[in-house]
Length: 60
Image (cartoon, rainbow, N blue to C red; front, side, top):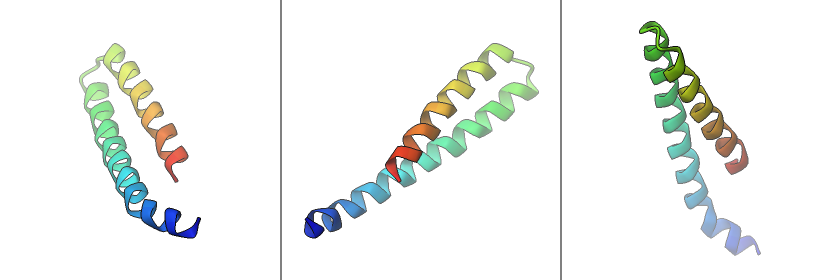
């Protein structure tokens, strides 16, 4: 069992890193949309960010 977890560790780290980058980029998109006054786009981006955040929590 330990060997299986050890083999999965790099894959999990990679997934976590990817999700973390996606979340950071999504937050930047939200900030840009809010400065442009695009409330509908902001709401969509916030929903996407929430989904990424939840995936990030479950990946850890």
